[in-house]
Length: 483
Image 1 (cartoon, rainbow, N blue to C red):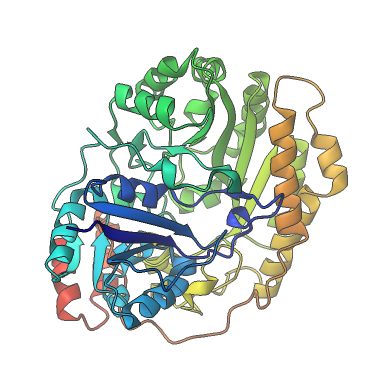
Image 2 (cartoon, rainbow, N blue to C red):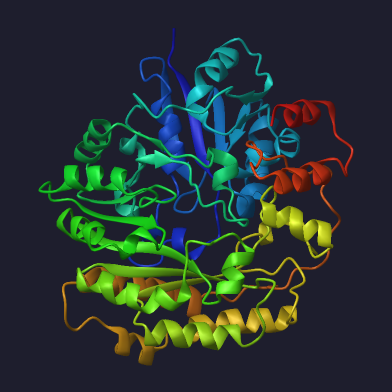
């Protein structure tokens, strides 16, 4: 029997972080999810071809037996175009990822099957049905993955010289913060699930890289577990970065272990310098009065701070932009990313905005944290757009970069320069969106359904009310009853 070929594709994202900008390299590889999917496809029966459209063209004439496409909301329409093109050639297509998991009925208009949530639990069934020529539409596991005995991601499929950061090691899934704008708790749950330490270290030692990213929603989500991982990383010559929340990052014991085990950067979702705003989106863990001291403390251990902030919250007015960037420069953040609040379909923010009638556009191409797809409360859309761009210009101005450059201390100046260079070029000089303020569009035919319903009663009721407000096709009705 001949070896069957499966073509896994990441559609072009049109984000500067995944677009080659310096020496043909992108800042980040978006392939972590697909590499995990490839790992559960038996190599003795199938050949896997991987394509990241951000760095290479798709070969639509390649003779393959099945195509798998993963897409987030902002590039799912490109994913649909790719799926349509392969299906027109008679190739079966399976779609997965965040958007398809929340809107499977929409995705099924363009593909033969949708994987909802974690692919590891259902890929054997998908492959069996593909062999029989009988893909069955929706594949969804009846339980979450225990995170034990997970195979190594297929790092051999990555074009190694095309990314600055290409190795993402996942040590856990889930997040117990429950921020209203985030899909993580509705995809992977509010409880953390942990991989065994020995399996994490096996992947770290065999991934082929000495500089890695720990790809958890919140690596410092609990205190005991990250300490175990960091103790196991000590002495291995690994340089790592991770996304964490602010609370446990204030503990000297955590930071000391992080530095000793090779941490060079922590990305923290500060989101806003307004405590009232943070409360409104359920980000209670953050306390703005502690932000500056936290940055200083992390720096004292030789670790860079990448601050993540959002604009366009209900309480934001035009003053928020200059106040935030002034604070960021004064507090000596190493890097900052500024996003426009985006009501991703199926998040609690989506249901809140939709109920209030604030969403203007349902053009998924524009759901990229740069375009404005809703009507802000305390400023015009033009003020939000101009303020967002002004924040980048101010923070990444040459004067700001010179002021913030780490002349002293143990922070890695090479990494510092790479990140500031990418963001200055990508956001300050290269973010000229053709139409940053979205035109009004009709509502989608179907409404999103969270793979995991929220636990808070009032949030469950809000989602249920939103779901009940539209006609429900039979396939989606079944999905909602299971959600």
